Amino acid sequence: MLQMKNISFSYDERQTLHDISMDFAEGQITGILGANGSGKSTIMKLMTCLLKPQEGSLLYDGQPVSYSKKALYQYRQHVNMVFQNPEQQLFYTIVKDDIGMALENLGYEEDQIASRVSAALEMMDISHLQDRPLQYLSYGQKKRVAIAGMLALQPKYLLLDEPTAGLDPKGRDQMAQTMKKLVQAGTNIIVSSHDMDLMYDCCDYAYLLQKGNLIAQGSKFELFQQGELLAEAGVSVPWIVKLHQTIQTPLAENEAAFFEQLGGSVRWSNH
Image 1 (spheres, rainbow, N blue to C red):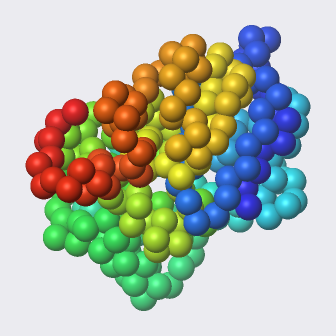
Image 2 (image 1 turned 60 degrees about the vertical axis):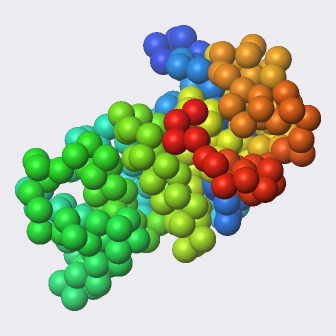
């Protein structure tokens, strides 16, 4: 399990996180919610050891994470992050070469690299793009390539920072389905976003931040119904929760379950 225990962090004497503790269980999608400036991105950087806490500790499998070069080398093969902007993680010209880059740098044999790259391409449904130049891909396709590059490392935890930023509605829906598929395949997902509809659709459990403080946590059925608390934190109530509260029906797990619950086949393409 990946855990944060009583972590505080400051930028230039300006405290950004205050005594944060979070447990990231396996076999689920865990969300980190909050408005811009709430500390979401800082938490993601702390979990990937791009930043080091001033107080508290980061634990992996019950042991404090060491920040030595050798220890971080091992840790980042188990816990890795895809940044909001895929351009930050794409370096090679051809898709399959970029996905295999990290494995090549780690000294894997060519047949191992080919096998893992093929599996990552298939998992992200982009096998047909493997020989394409990256410069000709859409923004959404580049995001999928960036995720595939991390999947090739076979991490235990994959962190996604605003994974639907810049995507159209179709791309957003595809990303939501991808996250669910990855969890079913054994990759634990931690996602940071202010897209509350996405978070309700995907997350099994979530933490809510406000100005660097952890103010609430719980399952989707517990946390997303606390309208006043969400508003206080500067985020909105998901549309499906508003609808359920208005028509007084039992809360469905996601949009598909909601329409199935109603017994209808009509679905909205945009919310």
